[in-house]
Image (cartoon, helix red, strand yellow):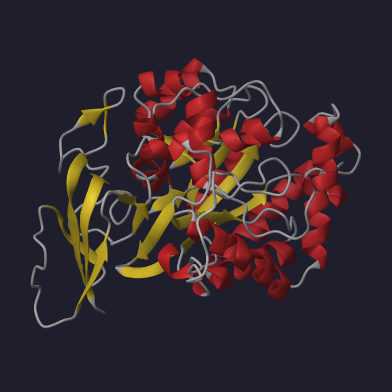
Length: 432
């Protein structure tokens, strides 16, 4: 592998306060370096800052990427998604904007079980083929690590099918894919009136089968009024831990359900949603070291006026991560750049807090803080070069084509300059 030098960057946002002790934009330290470069060798970061024009690392070739006037960030980490699914639910979107609630749509046969029916009809190959373009789009928006949940199979065979598809998706493209078992996403129609029997199926059959094949790293539960109770969530997450699955949880999205407290009790790595989490639950999460994962795409997608109180969580000292929650029902967005804009505008996070939420804190939320999430010497060389003048421009610009290049493990895996059409010699600039 050729060594890589990124030079002449306007700003380098290391997200490592110990490497570059800078506090900016609301007092959150993002390790900001004004100008400089990054030197990469053998897929890892070797130096950040003043690295010279053409440093020598040995006999290997040196690839140079000129980032003049641009901003460099760590590769973005999307730590809560449902990226592998079949079918779409745009008709439900129309129902929502006409006034129907999420629960009303579910009662009419929509919601999660609508996607479950489509996933059960799909083959493993179909799930892989429909997911790959979504991953390509994520990569072009700067995502280099993504967590992907099952949860649209809701029986043993289809949950296994989903997790095998997630594994194949990870092997087929550059983004690192982290698999999560979410057999407790909803109760399938055939167990609507036999919920205890379905919980037993998750405990006694699904978790052992998933672990026997080594198909998941995490176990998740949708703990919410009308879905899984706090007691059911505790039993599932503890059983997952017994089999080596690290716990995470969908918590208190629509109402306070005790899920944040369960997250702390079982030592969950992270808890997502948290729109109605109690003060006691959030305080317990802080003591337990559980990362708060906020999902503003859901509030936007469901047209809900209420978003999670990011400021309260930050004031409590929680690490706050951001994720897309990309799914066909409530958050049909797979760009963390759009999520950062929503977080700043609707949750009043500062641009620095949003950047940390997509990088260092998101890496913690999936147990990858030792390898990604900051531009520190020794870490994986996952980087994004943004064609913007300042890191604050990223949430300021709602989505759009602002990624110049994406580097994964020291290799340039996306370069927008190579994809731009060249102007004809006879063309003339348009007035504007």
